[in-house]
Image (tube, rainbow, N blue to C red):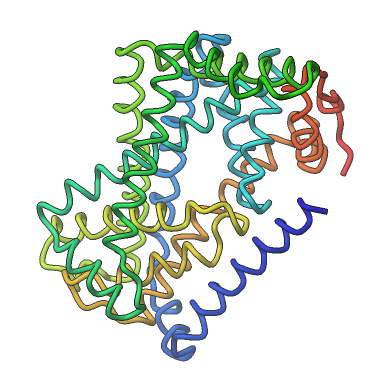
Length: 367
């Protein structure tokens, strides 16, 4: 019942933002902007994005290495299938799908694998926030925040500071747990002391699996490598934003390559952080609205709302659809269905309680 409520809540919020996105633009001008675009630039844009997924896979390889070394070529389909699931299922269910699938294929703890995915999310957020901080040296980021507040009544500077504090605090907590696991276990035992014996054992087992997933953070060299690998992931996605900007001749709006590049990196960062709330599949609705408003309100240039709407729609299409198609191809080649993975992924939560998750995946081609 609870999961069904979350499902429909995510769909409803995404639909509301999508309606806001399209109903606040002139459809005639939107149609003209879409018709006049040069879609040849979309091909290399998607290519850059697929390369960014290679870097994502390499980063995950290092996060999983202490659990089991898995080659990038073998891990890449799992990453794509996970992102495909995120693009089709609400509430970021793709994270459960990915952790379950890699656990089944490689014989590692699904809970520990899920912890590494949570680390990924924090690395992404911190990298994007770092991008924004660097861009603030070259672009009027404060002006963007003030424009958001003036147009929508949102105190984006306060929101930004809150996000920084939350993400940094979360990552710092994981680092403390990774470097001092015995202390983390001691705290867990104190917190769980009022629980019955069976629940205590399950909670302790869960903490052990979480700490196992955090083990990669104990190496300063690995930690540095993880941040280094995070940079090309998002720079390549910004290349997608830039290339599709050329499709809509945004290069004629900005004063030179560098100004447009700065704008595209900023839109990439703000749109992805703003749509990171696990609601609608693929962040549909929220991503479109945040990306367009950032592009339109950024004081670097004057971008027509209809052009910005068309541009963002094509950007998100280019981010979602290729991963869905490639993920489906991998599912077919592995004789697995997304339905079976999503059901098993939800059920795999019992692993933390010491039970075995169901294993209907390999060779399961059911719906």
